[in-house]
Length: 468
Image (cartoon, rainbow, N blue to C red; front, top):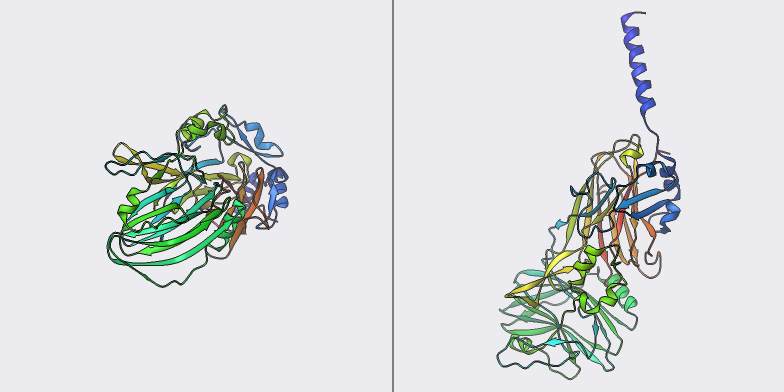
């Protein structure tokens, strides 16, 4: 055998050894791939062979070879990330509470009024901060949310309130300008319905539509009603709106008696009582329906001290999480299926609640009214992988909202989970949000917007699909 033949044989042997070392996709990944529904359709997680399991121990290695993908996570995780040093290596393939960073967008502030959600005559109120003002008794009317907004800002508005009294009331969204200027409404969708889910669904479905409204002139210390709506008993109002104001001002969500005058000056706003912002410890029996005190004591104790719902303003509300997907083998030890969740909330300010001399910091835990995304950077892929799928996994209550997923090049998919088709996403179910061709260096981008009153924290799975 000459030298050239020896080299050729050696290369063939190296290639054969390399091929023999390539691990094929597991049976359970093959089964999951075949069970995937088309984009936009829901399926039970157990049909896909996926289980989400809480444990305070290290994820068992034996489950890497079982027939089901068992995704383990720490039971008392609360707001920490599974990628924190304390958890590093204990829950491989699971990346929960991925940090969010502000995403530049045309919207400077989100204004949210969702607290108290139900309007009742026995709600606590606090007096305005004016000398000699008397403590008002309980009542239904007053300011439900208020915020100072700088000039030159685009504001996104989300309001969700139900009239729980036995008489008609009026809801006003008031803008009191501090300087001369102009205001332009860019988006507007409002729904009033006796079914709160239907109200949220209608407003949510129409919120993406642009509107053309005349520019409105603003005068100093003069107010205009961006919305004035009659609410009959048991009506739920859900409002989505976007507007731009060249001048700074005060934005307020106000519930009034039908025949009361409109608060068209800052001094009138200051005289209105402010509805008490409910803390969960005041209604612990309700909190127990959402959080298992025994399984999640850290989360229980923190949420117990938090406001039930969010109100106030949220600077730069649109957020994104950046993560790298770097799996170069089909071996289950590398966990080709990876699961993620975004950090649970975005921070805001509620000026109606003071903590000493400072306005209270509040959390928009449902991310209501915000567009929150995740970007997966594909650093490496298993051998021969040319296609991936993005799944939504729901381990909580019923989810409603919209997802948009794209690779920015070839494929974009949009899925609406609203009453109808495909319907809301129930607990224990999954949905295929996207499926498309991939290669190393691609980026998959996902954006989600929850409905006003059905949102929960979803997990997402990035699934490399075996070659056919």
